[in-house]
Length: 101
Image 1 (cartoon, rainbow, N blue to C red):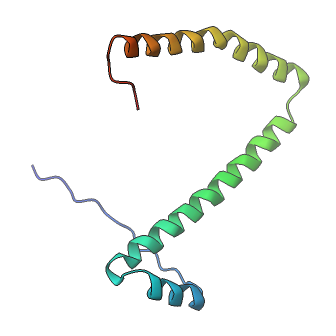
Image 2: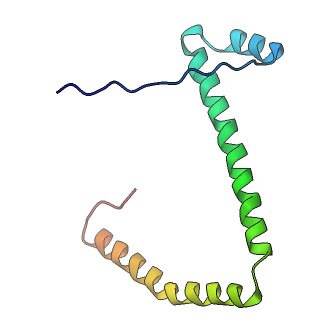
């Protein structure tokens, strides 16, 4: 049974004239749309990361001292688990296994 081809959404964006002129002068025509798409995607990702950072900051600012202490306690309990995980990885390297990427 043939699989459906991936669907793409076309988005129209107006870019500043100076940016378009610069892109036309610097980037080969065959790669121009990919470069511009990647730059826009990177920009949108950074906007999303900043929004998420603000949400985390707001969340942590409104927590009670008790909630903060409970979280620190849980993290302290995980410290030995982190050490165990690193020990496992070090043993794999010592046995000649390729390190994880």
